Length: 229
Image (tube, rainbow, N blue to C red):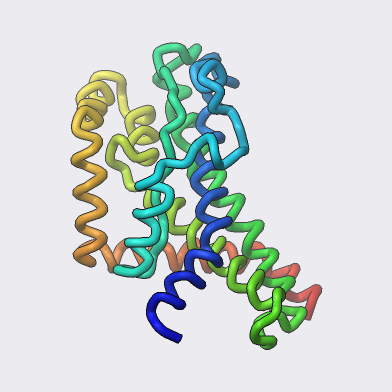
């Protein structure tokens, strides 16, 4: 199998997990924001589970592919769902909940993919080469990897990442206002984090965090594993 075949197979396996991981992450922000009083995403027509509403050509397609080829951790971003924190009923207290909604959606999706992985593994899908069972087994494995990576990455406590917004909401208001100013340089912060990952500077911490979350998911589905085996 040549390199092009490998890339095509990888794209095929990862396409659905990446699209839904990114899209549901963004939609979750919008739904929670609306619950707390901000209808901005709803008014913009972005409260949708349709991945087509959230796809960004670079962040949703090209970046995950590049990261997979370079560091074997495929994740990216979608068009950010618009949230006006000033329209929340209590912006400082409710901001962390809106920010946490995206990573929480990824955690739930990772759990769902892990359950499918266990079911398929118990059915022997991983041992049969070339059939649809094997394809879905690989997709389930990719779904876990993508969502865990997004969960960990987005919880990095630096604005504009979700972890930074969660921390902003937890800090005392005077300090929170100063810390939130980092978001003015959000594009550069995001690019710097991606560069550090590409250069493998963050490998140790990032991969340990991914390993911890993956083991946690395996523990949560362990009763299902026992039931099927």
